[in-house]
Amino acid sequence: MTDQLFTTATIDDLSPIVTGEMSNVCNCMAYDAETGESTDEPSPYCYGCFDDAVEMFGTDTKHLFDLFGHDRWQIVGFPVWNGTVNGRFEASTPIELVRAMTVRGEWSMTYRVYPDRIECSLSHHDAPMGSVTIVKPLDDDSVWY
Ligand SMILES: [Zn+2]
Image (cartoon, rainbow, N blue to C red; front, side, top):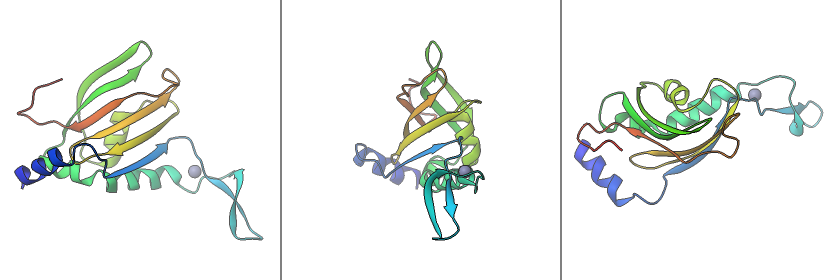
């Protein structure tokens, strides 16, 4: 099973399966009670956009959680105030993965999901221009880079 997925990953290396974006800042739009449609105005209430985005992210990345059957990941190019850092972490749920890929303050992120990895651009206070960050399940046999 693992071998099969890995082969697929090499073949489809260049084209993302799915792309998405999310933020921990509410982006809900106000709801017009008369027309029944959302407006261009920010909503005074959050309808749960972050939880919805995490759920979507979890669907988009489910195959990566299953890829090697463990919860160890590596991240390359995480943006910090003076450059980027690489690291390893554990995540067994979508929200744990999101937390490991982001920062404590306000942030927004666009992501592209591939068969074997996530490529994302994370924008936050110390990285207003975004980043080129790669997150992938840690392959114990692969060379750390
Ligand atoms: Zn919201």
